[in-house]
Amino acid sequence: MTEPMPKPLFDARMDQLGLKLTEVEREGIRAASRHILAAAERVRTKREVSVEPATIFAPKGTQQ
Amino acid sequence: MIPASIAEAAKQIAAKQVSAVELTKACLERAQALNPTLHAFIRFTEESALAQAKEAEARQMSGTLRGPLDGIPIAHKDIYETAGVPTTGHSRVLIDHLPQRDAAVVRRWAEAGAVSLGKLATHEFAWGGPSFDLPWPPARNPWNPEYFTGGSSSGTGAAVAAGIILGGTGSDTGGSIRGPASLCGTAGIKPSYGLCSRTGVLPLAHSLDTTGPLARTTEDCALLLDAMTGFDPSDPSSADRPKPDLLSGLHAGVKGLRIGVIRHFHEVDVTVSPAMAAGIAHVAETLRGLGAEIREVTLPPLQDFNAAGWIVLAAEAFAVHEAWLATRYRDYGEYLRERLVVASLISAADYIQAQRRRRELCEAVAAAMRECDLLLTASQPAEARQIAQIGKWSSFEAPNFTIPFNLTGQPALSVVSGFAENGLPVGAQLVGRVFEDAMVLRAGHAYERAAAWLDRRPAL
Image 1 (cartoon, chains in turn yellow, brown):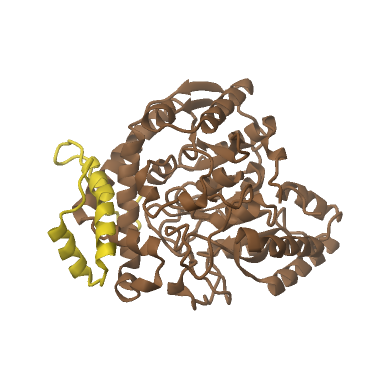
Image 2 (cartoon, helix red, strand yellow):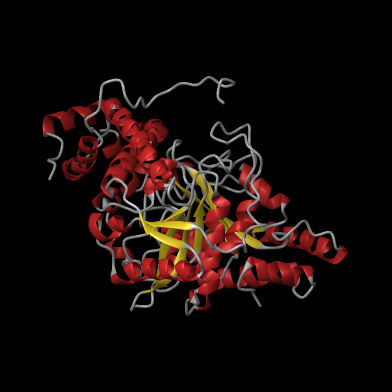
């Protein structure tokens, strides 16, 4: 099972957001972070560096 | 007094056997009698409903009805903006939000003559529920009010299943139409991405959000969806293509269609309840009996779709709510605000990797659909659970069967496929190729006519 986000990193992210959370709230949310971290790990499949671009910009009027 | 379906009501209205005004009054009375138990509505618009019904009745009497939705009582999920009627997203954050104009889909149903009875409960901003710390309580399942409706189109599922309205709007970003349809025992279609306008609908995740209807039957969904479709230049996601014909082939049956059962989704990747497994088998066997060819299809694991889907959904949702989260954190309910904080932990690289995986998954499904016309899978892992059992992180804890087709943009319909021993309904999901919504509706309609599930109604 994927571990939750390390506490120092999590605390830094919360400080960046500027949210005032209780310690109980922080720990509950940090524990749930494992779900997102597991998903982030799972979407990283092996592929050649140039394949499967995710962000293709097609200006209006150029799409078929 | 209240007909069982839109198709039936439309016939009665056209034949002047039922008055549009009396039908609206009957639905309002039923709504007000059941709402203290079901909490399906958060706001009634009785005065305007009766005014709309009177106009419909005038057309009824003069033989100038606009079509099958004229005089039909419906309601809108409270993320659809309605001119002069508060649209809150079931949230304290937008408690005073009074839109100046209707959402495009609201306007289209109104132009078709549908009578709106009010605004329906939703999970907060279509993601935060079922929550008990919001301005209104969560909707309850008409089959047993101790049980969950599914979400986020919770009020729509409850009100349709209870026979309060004949149809309503939902929205579907990861399963929010098909979940309530399955758990409340209704039909519900998430149309192809881009088929229906989202202008004036509060967003959850822009690359996944889809508007669509719930109704008791697939035929009714087809009638409602037909009035929702059409290019909308004000919605960047709207597909600039001709309005599809969803109705003329509805009764054509499934003879010769190739239907791929994604067996590993519900037998290997996730274990479903016996009733859900039996429901999928029943749909497959019934459609085979009607002349379809049933085959097995293998896709990447359900967990792969969920990983990509939840990263995309959560990251996009955080982007929508970032500013309010910083300034109005405690105005959100606990479930949504904490889910959004978890979403804030997703990095830009996570999001892009998820979108790369999404493209691969889309290609895998498209390849499978070169060999079949429709896919069949579960709508949910099981029948409804007790509402008290639905936790803050429940959507992350087990893979769902619906988000794969938000990722791919395909049309996906949930139909009632049976009942569990405790009397709660289950739904199966039929999925088509993008913009082949008509074929999905055709198969769902064929199944419903052959199965007898819709004869059952909640004992209210």
